[in-house]
Length: 470
Image 1 (cartoon, rainbow, N blue to C red):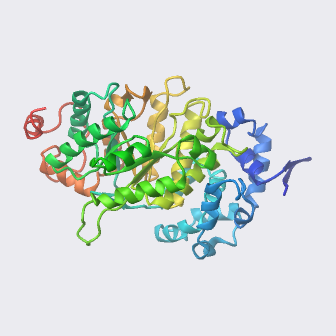
Image 2 (cartoon, rainbow, N blue to C red):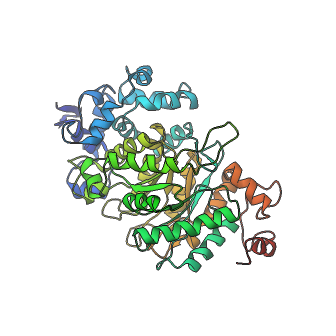
């Protein structure tokens, strides 16, 4: 059905909900490339005004992508929790934004509401939010997950230690790994993007990481970011798999382009759970969040699988896929796909905050790779701004890359020092189990919560000897 709004003497009409959402989206190069972006700022405002008046219930009766042809749509509709949705079911999108900003939207009420929200609902309300709204609302959401440590607690900031190497050289990986550990990085995961994505290489890297974690009793988890089918074969070969990684998208066709479907993800989750490698915590529960997903605005368009939808709404639909598998980590790699989809620092900043906001509202443990490619109109100052705002918004984790420069993936991310700076500025700490390990190893002084290292950390020579003289 058509939607419309009048500004002055001009009436703007939008043919369907998909078009309305696309025209209401803040400007970004991917939507322009797809030919669905608002032609003028005035048209965008008209779309946002029409969207603000739209009842939230409309998203339950009008599918952006037909139910019959898309398993992501079927998943979203079939798993919707009507009882959880009931407290806000009478609201419009604009009223919902106002409610989210009110004191009524507490951490507890937001957690209870999450199963009742669809990805399209949270994408819609994000389009009406200023940046400070995206920060303030997301900050109320807390999503705690566990495997060998506890992530997502209040006033905590975890990091993925990313020791990539252009030839998968074990000595080079070990050097980056040691560098990161000595600077307090690695509590979210020690995750390697393999230069050669095959089963034998995945097994080799998994064994190396498992040996380090076990030898030094590091309360963290490892992951080799190989295709899920390779990880399944690695499990069959007896490899020490902690987390199963996979890139996911917001449409069935996008996931098909990745070589996956929902059934394959379920198979991988069950295989990882069968290994029972998570810690048995004091409450008697084993850490059973075994999935690690990565996403990025523009992936559907790059695969020709966007069905005329805007890239930010499809990103939120990817989170609808992720939450069905109770992941330990969800990472929006916000600037990695390139300027064709997010042109400059301004667009990357907005997209990163939107992604974190939408994921948190849906109940996901959201992290962000605050990053850009070298041909984007962005720089380190843009990334500092996004990183600071994400940490203010309660982001669960960020990346830790040596020197912020990933020489294997050839893009710019955040460094070990960046995370330490955020911990100091924001009064944040590492995951509690990992923090205790840092102190026990002498990397942090006893009682010390964070360190901004300008040179070698405290007790470097002693720590180096304890870590095998590396």
